[in-house]
Each structure stands twice: as C-alpha cells, then as structure tokens.
Length: 201
Ligand code: ADP
Ligand code: MG
Image (cartoon, rainbow, N blue to C red; front, side):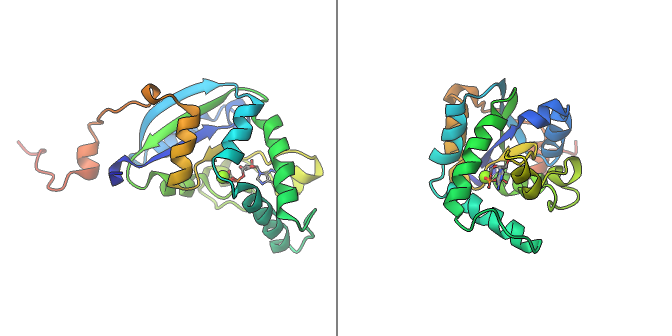
C-alpha cells in the first residue's frame, strides 16, 4: 500500500452528533491535510456494532479490559474486576446500547500516516485523562468511573481505527467499495510534491 494512501475509519458517535460537534470534529482532521474519501450518516444496528468491535480485532476484548484496569490503578482505585475478558464482555453490551441510540457519521480519511495522526488528534480513550488539545480532551469529560457507576459505555465522541489492519477491515464493514472515492485534492501537490516546481510562472 502506498504510504500517501493510508486510510483510517472515523465514526462520530451518537454523543458527537447530539453535541452538534460534527463540523468541529471533521475540521480537526481535515485541516491536517488528510483527505475525506467517504462519508455517511447511519443509525447502526446492534449486530453492526458487535461486528465492528469483536470481529475486526479478536484481541479487542482483552485489550479493552486491560486498559480499564490500568485506568483505575493509575488513579489509585480498585477496578470492578481483575479479569480483562469479563470487562470486555460488559463493554460490548454497553457499546451496543450507546452506538445504536441515534445517528452516527462514518467517515474514511486518506493520507500519509492517517491512522496515527487521527489517533493523535482524537486523544486517549478516557476523556478524563485524554491530552489537552485532543478532541476527546477538549470537548468531553467522561471517565471509567462515571461509565461503570452508571453501567454504560464511556461517551468519548469518536471512534478512530487503532492500526492499519483494523482500519482496512473496519472500512470494509462500513462502506461498499464504490462508496470510497478515489480523487485528487489540489493541496496534495503542496503536501507531497517532491520539487514544488509547479508554483512559479
Ligand atoms: P478507543 O475508542 O479509544 O479505540 P477501545 O477500542 O479500547 O477505545 O474501546 C472502544 C470504546 O468502548 C471506547 O471508545 C469507549 O466508548 C468504550 N469503552 C472502552 N472501555 C470502556 C470501559 N471500561 N467502560 C465503558 N466503556 C468503555
Ligand atoms: Mg479501539
């Protein structure tokens, strides 16, 4: 795969839509130079949500559990369980409720280092500890503690692919081949051209 054509899936989750942050979120990614190559608004089914999280990455349940346990321990708190898989199973059920509660906006961005850049701009999973300047850090306040207390998913506005392999599978899950558009942006010359020899007359 050509490096300039790396792709990542972004989903503005139901809370991002309800908080009227669609424009702001797209703007944050778009202004880096990444190119929007697919976009649609849908109300996902529970089955789609389950496939998105569990089918794309078989390690996901365990990872999600481990991250939650670390999150609690870093705050000197006791996690609700020491078993990552148990936490992972509970999170899937909560995500089904969260992600099917209203429309979401699914998008595919393309460009050099798309996956890594989008994760950087998005911020860490738990908004309480996401860096300042990231979307999750700037626009929302949720935490593991809040989510567990109310038995719900963490509301963090966005899904962003975790790595390039995950990205490819996720894009196939959300978009038909002909919904992802190959086209050129004028600004790509400025981002990628080797000699910048097309400017001066
Ligand atoms: P990310 O979205 O940062 O890649 P994960 O893939 O680990 O995070 O988890 C997917 C989503 O599940 C998170 O964005 C969040 O909405 C929710 N989530 C993760 N861990 C928990 C948890 N311990 N409790 C509730 N919801 C969680
Ligand atoms: Mg993830």
